[in-house]
Amino acid sequence: MAQFLLWKRHVSEWVKLSSKTNGARAQSFHKLDASFANTKEALDIRGDAL
Image (cartoon, rainbow, N blue to C red; front, side, top):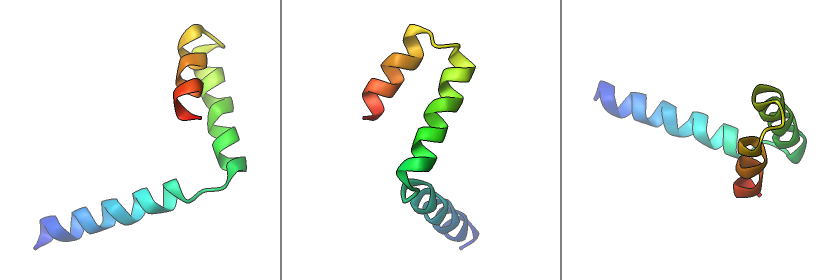
């Protein structure tokens, strides 16, 4: 039962994350750019996400 509750919480967190606005999505791209320092990987990840 406890595992089911953990799974349910995980799913609701995922739904919250996936239902964020485009503004939040753009913000996460900005964070990706900062962490990858605009390397090819960041551009590839951005391309995959869009």
